[in-house]
Image 1 (cartoon, rainbow, N blue to C red):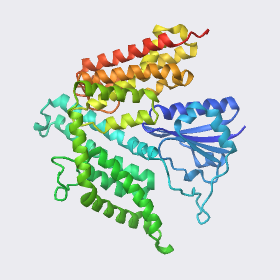
Image 2 (cartoon, rainbow, N blue to C red):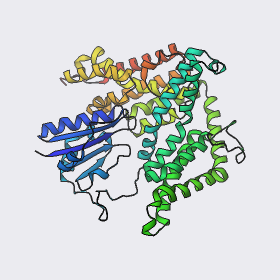
Image 3 (cartoon, helix red, strand yellow):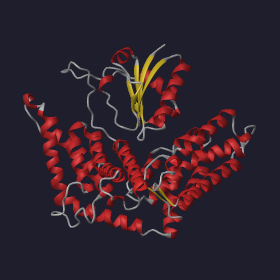
Image 4 (cartoon, rainbow, N blue to C red):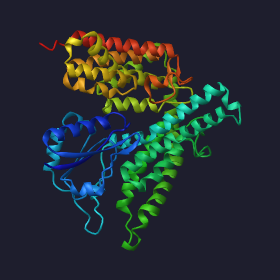
Length: 468
């Protein structure tokens, strides 16, 4: 029997994180090994691996789409893969980990530290930023909605009231969204030395740092928004990596690099680049994009909703799904976003359609285990956890994925056509009862029901009987 430790983490920290952990635990048990899995989810790190457990481990598995600190595992055989790999082939990962070579230690350090390599993978850096941003968006959106619910549409004219306090707090959380996104993208690329420049770049993009005297469009009339935060976050991260190579200090001064030299130089450069070079173009692009989105009506809006819906259902939590989700979160403003509404309704549809088919419409076409999983898919779908459809898609992708995409595409298109707007990035149906979270609640529920029924009916028709 071998002992293993593992860390699982997905961008939202809700579904993949725990599904991967469960898959690794079950696989290890079947193979006769012992494993402890630390989950770094939306509630923080749970089941944390101790130094004693690391020392006793024969191998380490990191299944994550976000940046995970590997320094504590130095000297141990270690593999690092996307979180979905643990769900698909947990036994294969355990075998790979046990066959892996030990990681290196720094020769000049008493503490084990993994040799740093320049991290690669734009998607992973983006998802790290998004995972830190989501709590600010969720808290801000819900607090703004609660403020409106208690104080009415003119809550900001009620100074000193609880409603106004909630509204202002929500707006404050919202204001931190873009700096946090940019800051943690930079952190994912360059670790802690990159976080200051990233936050400052995101603050410029959000308008938190006034830049009207330099830009044609001051914050009052336009900012570079989500697009600017992305650009500045990546620029800050890779800038710091470059400065690490260029700036050489005597060994006696090397301790100043991460806490003084790199933050100082990179933050100064980011400010100058934004104010004198990139600010105006980014503001113009973002302003034009927002104007185009606001002008979408009828066929154009339906087409965008259809595309976003298909993206949400294509890989159910993978890169394509997350691209649509990130686009949706970037459009959230006080009052709600039609893009975010289409994204969430389309994300709820796949597990709900599968649940409808497996537990109501075509029970005989699913195994007993699938029918039990279908019961859980009801709760997962209603909670906007698209990953609840993954086990079914993995078992029969050529039928399940097209059925999901059609239903989600229709749900997204209907949401856009009916003028639905959503003010929060997550929560599923459980947040819809809060006043002002969703615009046109009746239309939104119609889009969800129609998309679910379409997916469920198509899957019931095209799926083969178990006996065949």
